[in-house]
Amino acid sequence: MGKSNFQRFGKVATGLKCIYASLLLLVLSIFGGGLAGGIAGGKAAAEGRQVDQNEIGPVILVIGAAILVSTGLSIYGQISCINVPEKVRATNFIYAAVALNVVGTVLNIGGQAKIVPPAAGQVGSLFQTAGWICFLIFLKRLAAFLHNDREIGRANFVLWGSICAWISFIVVMIGLLGVVAGGPGNANAGGAGLLGLAALAIGIFALVLFISYSNLVRGLRLDIEDRLSGRDMAG
Image (tube, rainbow, N blue to C red; front, side, top):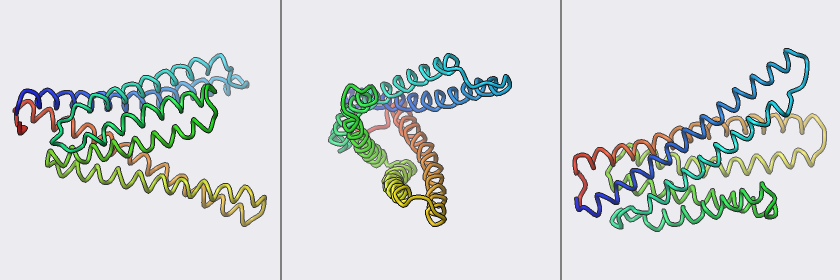
């Protein structure tokens, strides 16, 4: 493998490592925040009072900071992946992924901070979703270049699973709006129950997709590092 390609793939591996670290940080922040919130809630319940905002406030700040760091790591990782050699034929997708994610993140944060209109924040979420799809296509092409059938399968599963999950989520939200507009009643109550089960199923499936995505990123990073250590990549 040529020195230039060796360095390029090394940077891609570093980028994937940062993305995997961002996923771990996200999981730890959610579980840590849930645990801290549960402890605060249990303490308040034992004392027969409501949870004090002074108790839960720092937890929320720490979770928010961790999520921001996780997002920054993820974007930095994707930027590092821009170094992928042209022969992988995935350059356009990683550039699109970075651009969409950066713009989407800025709009999303701006919407939550009320710096921009809430609608802009929603548009930002759509940009981030499009960026996610572009990045998955990038990973799929990277796996194909590496002839890694296992990671190709994972990439296909996460890619099409994510698309189906988003479509299902939109359908459930539309159904929920219909139930709310229909007012109280047994039929609407039954519909709400079915929508609740559907939402639960989507949530479980999203967790499966998250785990598969984490394994995909880790698997590709390990594959590249193994090949680099043996200089087993065509120059």
